[in-house]
Amino acid sequence: MTTQPLPLRRRVTLAFMLLGFMLSLSFALSTVFITEDYEQLLASEILRGQAEDYSLRLSNGLPAQLPQTHRLSGYLGHPPVRYANFGLGVHEDPLQDGVHVGVFDMPAGRMFFVINLGDIETLEQHLNLALATIVALGTLISGWLGWLLARRALAPVSALAAAVDRLPTTAVATQLAASASPDDLGRLAEAIDRYQGRLVDVREQQKAFFADASHELRTPVAVVQGAAELLREDAVGFSELTPRLDRLDRGIGDLIDLLDVLLRLARGKHDEPEAIEAVDWTRGVVTSALSRFAPDLHIEVAGPATVTWTVSRHEAALLLRAIARDIVPPGASGTLNVSIEPEGLSLSTVGELGTSNARRPRGPVRSDRAVGGGLVGRLAGAHGWRIDAKPGRAHVTWVDSAV
Image (cartoon, rainbow, N blue to C red; front, side, top):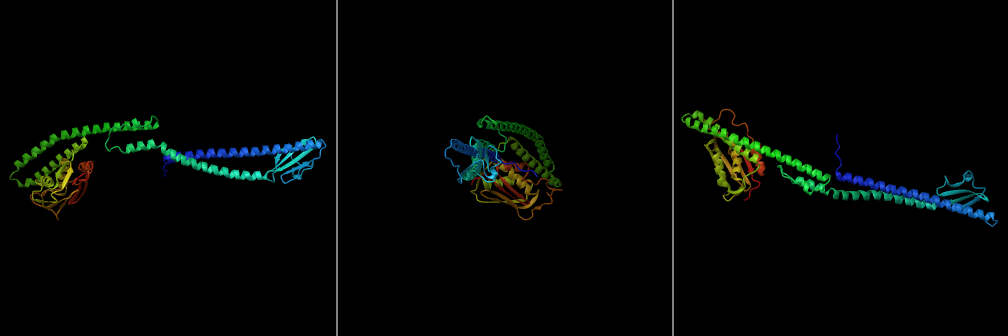
């Protein structure tokens, strides 16, 4: 199971927190070390000063009584038993915190001085608590500053990501590096620009290929269409050939429309939308699409006469003809209802469409009954049109329409 890496902003924040923790901890340890060292130095100087002072008095025969208080005690040659084995110098009492014992050889003899700095130890405990708080706050504040600074530092990256998100779905040349800083971010922007440039080159090559293929295929299709028209003229009086010729005409019509769609998709450019009167235009397109293949079909177009669509006329006609031929089989008889709406139109057959014996095709009628996909579906997607096609009915929404 792979784990997702942390977002960059969180990693920067964690790095700042670690840095803040290390700096705060270093400060706290340095403070504790300096405090302990200062306490040892202070105790040593006090004890040595007391020893020298009392030794000088005793050596000169002056009256001197060694101190015996709760803070400072002095002994000449006879210290408490637990201090008797201490060597020269200043030591800490292992049994009592804050008690320092100084052992000095003076002219008056070996002197022991004991000082109790327990209240200083209490202050050190408060200092340790304050230092622990400083470490915690330093870590949290560093993380907070890291979070804020990371957002500011990553703002150019977010801007670059937003610029990439705004790029169209088609390949276009970009100049993202022009607005990026000359560093790693600039190199990333340059890489994106180069990648977009390669996509543009590939897109142009694809356009050239499909355009050449579409143009070259038009000639044999025109030949086949002319031959089919001659066959229809020669087949007058042979009614058994009519369904086959109708199917041939239907296939040629589909092929011509698909080649037109392919050429338009290859160019990547579409006709400008224009206002059309929905009812009359729809009746004409559907009738022309089905008149030869289903002459007995009755077409009912209903809707407000004032509805006007703003669509690309020719490309919308390509889509509507494909839908009409998709839901109506060749030679069908019955009724096809077309309902005009401000946002689009709906097509539906009434009951089961009959098929006259003279025009009934042999074998399967079609093998590609999927208007929503393929080239026609791509053309609709390029315009933002939505198609909901089911057996016997379909609904088209012109997303860019206007009433």
